[in-house]
Length: 108
Image 1 (cartoon, rainbow, N blue to C red):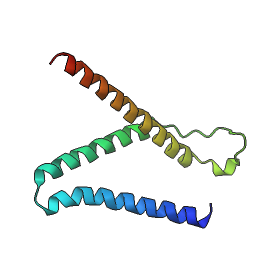
Image 2: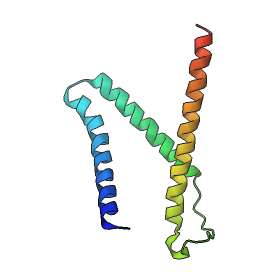
Image 3: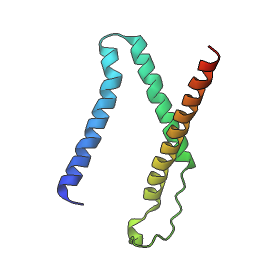
Image 4: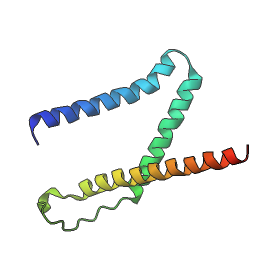
């Protein structure tokens, strides 16, 4: 991987962590516990979805053509599986929330 891509990815990770920390700390600093509570509940929900995605992801190594077998590790497969499962779960939750909103509108 070229150096500039690695540096950009590192900065991306750092900025994501800083944004997450500031999203939790900022409401606490200004004593707005109601907003901080909502943020913490949202983050806890994301952590729960992440844990569910991690538990459902497999780690068995299988042959993929075109990739060196020594680069495919069970940890890498588990990480990729977790990302895919989390995407599927979030898409499913978004779809269900859209259906819920539309059905709730019919009964108003």
